[in-house]
Length: 323
Image (tube, rainbow, N blue to C red; front, side, top):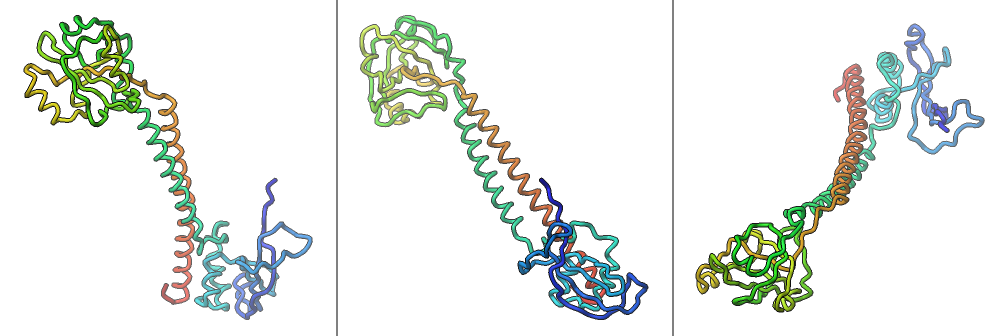
């Protein structure tokens, strides 16, 4: 249930004499009254919490309460506007005042904390979303590796290799091999269990020369068995982190060795994760909303503070003082 709050008088802060602009500039006694927000017509006076107070000026001539905006209250409380000048100053700016001018925000700092908090939330959401999108992105499209073609070793050795063409290959006899000291780095989207075993770089003799075969360490023993068949596909050498020194040695010692394409055996392609894509987009959207909300709150309070400072500058100009 929404309860509308109104200024409720708490105590008198000061009294002074002056001319009443609301009653034809007649001499009058004035009081400056302190108010707190509370229900209209409360049963008992609200407890004085020590401020901040909404200030108002009351004239003894008609008893009317004229509420002062935060800007004018600030000038009086800081000693920049004398009490005797308050009625005339307030009367001059009253027609241009809005409800927002009576709310406390001139000394507010919480909007800065809100902006910082929601900026941190936005950054965290963006980093999380980016990580989800990065996890979902694949340099290798798994759809290209569907419906592999079954090839015997002889068929593979006599047919040209094509990049990303999946085959179930009956592995031909290997002419030689080298065990690699470091695991080979593949493009994102290619996975395969190494089971702690080093990968093997082998070569076979084909019709056009020699071909390179990269064997997953987890399958190294089984592939060497006669008539073993395993899923494989050719990748460009530039997509693999093969040691260049090893390749240079093999080129020098193996005439006709083709290194542009490498047949990779024992690895598989993982399709893009649609859920991760959705989560990534959601994270980015949440980050944008959080930052927009923080900027909105900050800009609203900042505009109100600037409005009050302009009001204060105008009041000081009317008093003949500099800001």
